[in-house]
Image 1 (cartoon, rainbow, N blue to C red):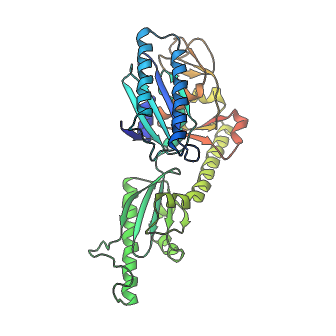
Image 2: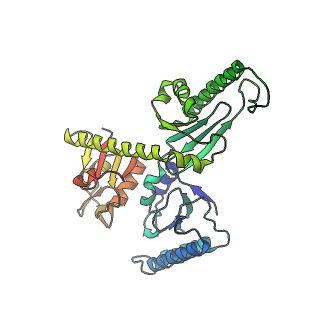
Image 3: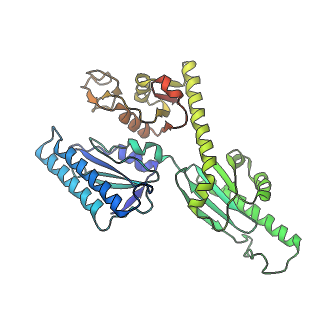
Amino acid sequence: MQINELDQSTLRRLTDARPEKGKVLSIYLDLDPTEFATPAARSTEIRSLLDEAGRRVKNAEGLSHDELAALRGDLEQLREFLEGDGFSAKGAHALAVFSSQAGGLFEVIRLPRSVPSQVALNDAPFVEPMAELATPGRWAVLLVNRRAARLFRGSGDRLQEVESFAEDRRGGRTQASGTQSRGQGAVDEESHYHMTDTVEALRSGTKRVPVERLVIGCPRDLYPQMERALPPDLRERLAGHIEVDVEHSNAEDVLRSTAPLIEEDERRREREALDALEEGVGRGGRGAAGLDEVLGVLNERRVQTLLLDEGFAASGVVCRTCGWIGVSGDTCPADGGPLEQLEDVVEAAIERTIQQAADVLVMHRHDDLSRHGSIGAVLRF
């Protein structure tokens, strides 16, 4: 069974996966290495999840005989996957598994961050725990010294090395220090060419696949030179400098060294979003606060960024025909159809946000949103 990586396109595809009949069984398996490092600990957690899934299937109401049979098949498929000999948790802090035999769906997603283990049985995949984890790789980390350069990309949860070069792009290989006697002028010239080539490679790469924030990892005395060499657009995205072993650090080492800068930047990002919300609400413009208002602008497809307090949930209603969501009511104001009660309308709000290619930002570092009912939105217009 192929395990897929989480990204925005995968998340959007899952929010659109709604079987015409039957339900979707969603399972999140926490693989936090501090708690589930051993096979025995993982097996216990898996058995507990499967038992809970079995209870959900057994207690499901309002389903036909065929739909119940399909759910039992989903449960067996999940059991075979999670307890099978081929199961591997390598490289994952958590797994999300979605199964619907009625809808032809079985997908496994590797998550870059630990999430609580849980089971959901809904009309569509339960994607809420993944929403903030699917932020596109907005970080680039360039490691560079006078003879080598390496480029990492990713998010605050995971970095991956995407390019490495230690050769003179003018045709020769940069030689290791001490292998040949050269004048200082030749060394300085070679170093200058290497810096120039490194910046050009970075500029080209970020033009093809843009990044929001850049970190330079290099010897302290080299940083001013690298900063000056950056083109203006990349210099504006520079988040700071780290000192690491340029040639031997792995992705985890680089992420660990970059973590304080990422934390500082995420705090700033939350603050800017909250300030934009306050300004928009205060002027009656590009801001909506409170559950009723936010659901309204989501129905109008005006949301640029959905802001949520961590763990916020609230009941509401949905029209299964047109997708309208609201706080309460019996009849859809958009098409006159019946409204269905939802235990958690926030999940539906997150789905609408993702489908509209807008961002979901969960507040972890500030509590300002509580005075707005724990939910707000910065608007496109």
